[in-house]
Length: 347
Image (cartoon, rainbow, N blue to C red; front, top):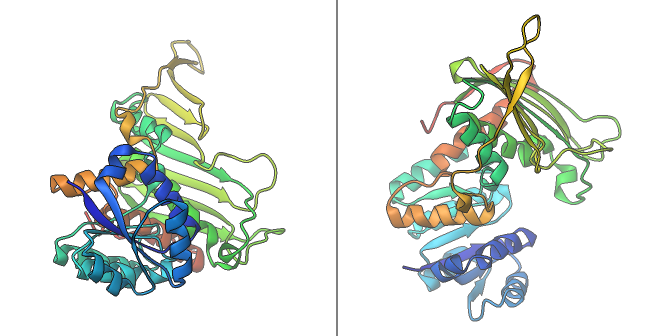
């Protein structure tokens, strides 16, 4: 079974999507790109030529291209402000839709897209690719297997200094809106817990080259009495953390740390007598399924398998809205200086 797909939004991000698709022979066989849509059709034409897509329908009007191609799915790679209209159009044409993150520019938009997908009987999911990497999957397995006992806290540090240029430099809430959702979503996935509330302080530190919100510190209360803390900056010059953050998981028996790259360490209480019991190392299990550790490619595979199997993919919008709520809750808390209760929609 193969699917006809249209890509909407043919800028630099679309190249990453196509590389992910073409890196997997099974995906290349399962998905045939039949249309390319961009406000500037010449950009779409150039993208098709660069990736050897052959004869495809190219245009600037999504309605027309979907009509002409009779596509089964839509890959939505537009800027966030255009997402709502693109998703609406795709669902109206009976397409399953896979969107770039974030899911929406507001909770209201996200709710609307969830309703539209349900009414259309189609899947709308989000490329939350960073939960599909080996390190995040290893942490989740360790928690599931009780390696460090009952999880009581997660802590993540994210300190980098990327000089992007372009739209990010002018964004409001740039760190929370454009990047923190990856860490928030990973924390929700790893813990298996529901975020209940957040208190956040957002700043734009001296020396920042961003217009607003390059740094944020947030404390989330999770279900079961657990806590998740996030410390982040996108203008932190000097030695950086990984793009995946540096993590510390605290459990009732011990702790697990991951540097966001290759270094894992798990330790549990030792048997030394006295004030401090010491500790002993334990092995961190590998991810349960290596096929789920390929980032973007694994998201698309999960999306395809969900369509074929009549199930919901892991990053379906009705689940991803909970990660989006963490972002908008943090922004609201930073604005008001008060803790914010988080929506439990999608449960």
